[in-house]
Amino acid sequence: MPKLRLNPIVLIVINILAPSMYIFLDGGFLKIYLIAFATVLLLATGCYKIFLVTSLIYFSMEGCIILSRFVPAIEAFALYLVVLQQSVPCFGLVFALMKKYNSAELLSSLETMRIPRTLVVAVTISIKYCPTFAREFKYIRESMRLRGIPFSLRHPVKSFQYFIVPQLFRCAALSEEVTAAGLVKGIDAPMKRTSYFEQKFRFIDGLFLVLFIAGLIGGLIWYKK
Image 1 (tube, rainbow, N blue to C red):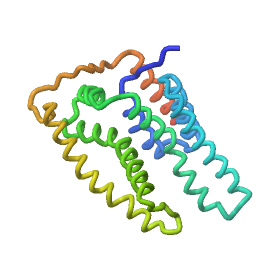
Image 2 (tube, helix red, strand yellow):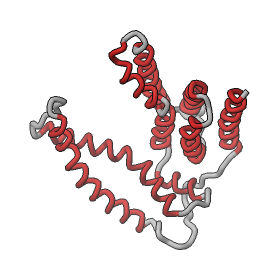
Image 3 (cartoon, rainbow, N blue to C red):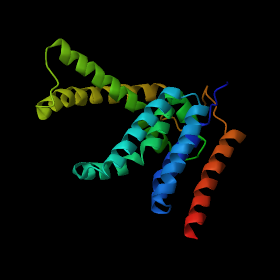
């Protein structure tokens, strides 16, 4: 089965619209609608591993929320999970965005939206830095293991210090590298950029966006009755 490759703008717009809709729509409807739509998108784009992890996290939270009805001791924790659970579908789509598209594709797509280049660069770097951040933590933990420094929950402040101090230094170094790479690629050039990855907004992209927005409008009309 061929994997669908959507324009990154579709995933970005969905992640912008979805959280703000909790102000206007019934929370129960929107929660089910978002997880169903995210499931379709993740499976259609071939992000099976992200779908499995997202589903496991989502239904584990749902299990804790149901359990809290019978165990009052975890009721406060369950309320926190209710809020956090609403963001799980969006996080799944963000991870799909980071996995399926490189920086050049994201830049090419965002520049078609005619938004300020400063914002385009900031969004692209923010999205692509997340996996780098996780990879740096993995390196730091490996260095701690080689030096015999344990990560202990009994000493969370000290363990956090061992993580965060090297990470801050790495952030400073990586920011310089990213800036240099952007300058080499002409990110500050006044003329319009060209890209090897030309991202066109196709019919299938518009169809997914229209279906998503139509579902939100349908839910709004239904619960206003």
